[in-house]
Length: 153
Image (cartoon, rainbow, N blue to C red):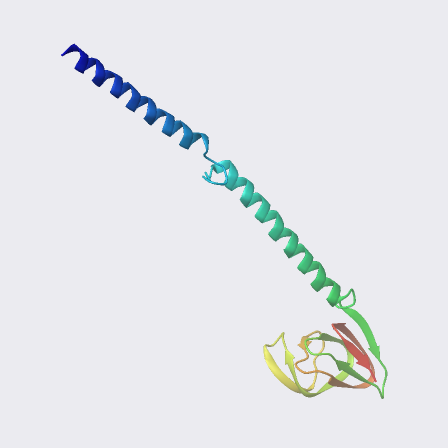
């Protein structure tokens, strides 16, 4: 009967040792290609890399868009139009009548009043051209502040 107890103890020891060896092999391989393990440090590193990549792409796109706008499109420019000439605005250009008499041939958005107007323009109001080559006729010498594309013809 003593042999039977000895055999059970030996079998239990081998069973426990085998289980421990299997767990050690499984844990020892954690984090490898075959058994990936995600840790907080790994996630922080990946998020940091992705954030840097996104920030870089946003900066590149913003630089590209600013380059397309050009320096002339980023500030108001004082434009003087003499009698007999007309000011033509590109679509989306903003204009402020500073002095003189001018009128819009067709509807132009008066952003100050929040309405579309046609005809005579008032001083010190922001107007936005809604169509390409929007014509502003002048009487006498007129001074505008223009933000965006324009030509004088």
